[in-house]
Length: 154
Image (cartoon, rainbow, N blue to C red):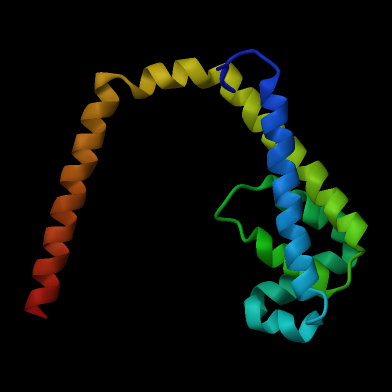
């Protein structure tokens, strides 16, 4: 089976399916949140974030949602979508923007994986990375032990 790291065009199918999956997720949020409106938004989105997002949505909701689709986690994409839905952004515009933005993001990631993938895999398999992982485990273990001793004494 040909994977996405080869130069075949199979990656396009992966990108398309991922973008459609994201769009379906946004549709579910839309169907649940549209009825709740701005009053329901307070239950799910931090008021500080909500105020900032509302201000940006009033100027240009389409660009705000589009840019949010490009930013990887832990960016609160769902909060952006909920705010857009609560502000009654047109469903077709919202879904189209999410689909287009996700296509751009996932295509970029796929092309980067194709271009850098094999070199990155060789680097990750190197002895240097293995030793760094061991070092991080030791540092993490020592940090945990230190924290437990400090917690135990207090």
